[in-house]
Length: 147
Image (cartoon, rainbow, N blue to C red; front, top):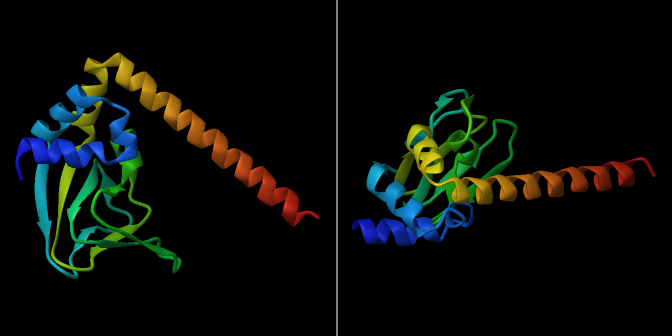
């Protein structure tokens, strides 16, 4: 894929779209592509997380170890929190077919945010909105359980 193709893919990711075209171009140039064979792990639960992955083609089953799973296909951002903070992977990602991803290292992501304070503010605001929404949903669910 060309840099322009990678930028177009990154722009499809809601979280990354917030950063703007200049930041997306820097991410596309600095990121790397990885191919993953069917049945292979992109990462496993408990691994140190130092990057997020945008699915270019194929699909991954994301399993949390407790039986919950989702499928992430093209345009999905896997491991979003790893872009922001050091952590261990809470889940595993297994390729359901031959797949490829763009690996965005946390160090690159942080350099992009440092070079574009406006993009960093947009991302901060989005994360704050999501956190507020999740807190509200938890309160509503708690209220329903106590009835």
